[in-house]
Image (cartoon, rainbow, N blue to C red; front, side, top):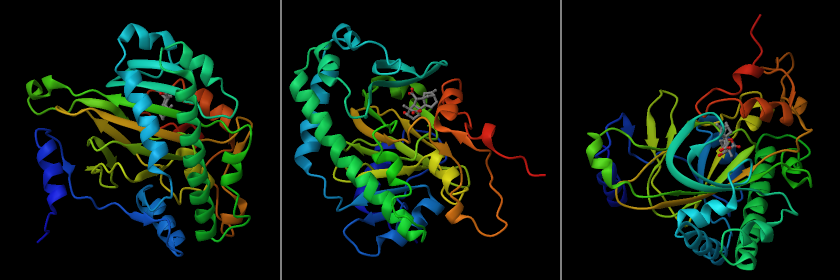
Length: 333
Ligand code: GA4
């Protein structure tokens, strides 16, 4: 018999109004970054789930809270103020509309480039939060998660036994790296009870295009990942940890060994959810292809070669739930 822990039961109770084949047991890998041998666990997690939780990550809580406070101030502003940031095309404030092709969700968000040199001061001035506080909070946070992301990517290269160990992380460290920072606010939805137990989608199901994504949320539930059998696994929130998922680019670079995980966020009836996601991407000119050092003799590439620019161009023509890698898959002869 499976014994449910108190937090799991509480979590289950919080979402039991939602009718779907949702699994509520938290069976996801938890990686302790302070442990010497975590590289093998990381590889296993990327192969089996494309998703894991990171503890003992070394990122100071001070940076996290500082940014969270700035973000809460921003989302509390009147809509007209928030809209002064301009639409997210590609960087700005968005409300309910996600991407350019008709997707919607119960969410408002800020999209920013995570590249060095972005003029946060100009950006923040437009919407009334203190530009200097906002800039410094975003910068310190991004510096921390980027460092952690690169450490994880280097451990993954080690765990896969490939050289050089910066084979993935160098793409993110590169000055030209096309990384994105997203801050999502899922307001509570009081009408959820009127939906007869149907799901209300905060952010629809999708895979992330980049190499890896690093998410931190407050303690409100909502995130779900898709398992191999097609069921959805609810991820209990944990504001002290980070959640990492494999993106499409890493799936290609590992020739399908690592899985780019489908995930979604359901809206909550009672509590606000705030999440911040750093999407670590390669430079636009980077050729994305399986790493030769990883390929076994006579192993065929599952994908046609493409640049990150080509992938992005087609991604922005797609709907959120589309299989964006389909276009680049080689059809078996
Ligand atoms: C999904 C992952 C990231 O949130 C994102 C999203 C982007 C956007 O919101 O502009 C996209 C989506 C994401 C993939 C397909 C296109 C582009 C919305 C959309 C329908 C910022 C990203 O990089 O790709």
